[in-house]
Image 1 (cartoon, rainbow, N blue to C red):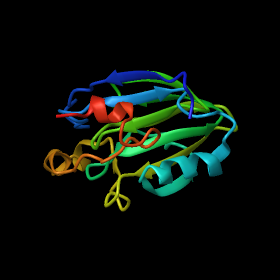
Image 2: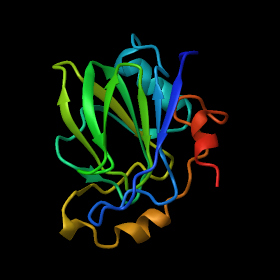
Image 3: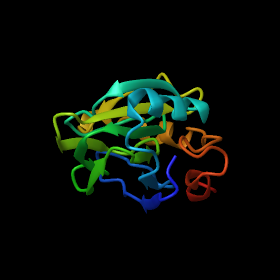
Length: 171
């Protein structure tokens, strides 16, 4: 973990198609991890802090969201431009060492990336088997009701019980 972590938070409103999360902000931890850890090292950090269901890949290149799980995306290699909050959201450039924590309902999409871009995804306990919905009106359905029932995680995926997520998501 890096001592030079910059914490960025953003709230995204419901756009009528992608609900986003009415009560929780996206938390971006810039430079939270050593960019040289690689995927195995990043996965060890996430698992050590209680986040499971890990995978290593990329971010879909279409708008999508999860109504039943919070998601940590830790960049293990390369760079990318992501759109958060749905088509009317905000663009963010991310690189190895950055972690994004998306509350349930947050739209996200990869707009572009370097050839070596790779992320490690993880979820709080009990949220590892999640649903993915696309950013289409017909996929909204019961999403807002499901989002409201997703429990808060007990730990920050990178810094544990005392991490920035715990402060940002305190209700």
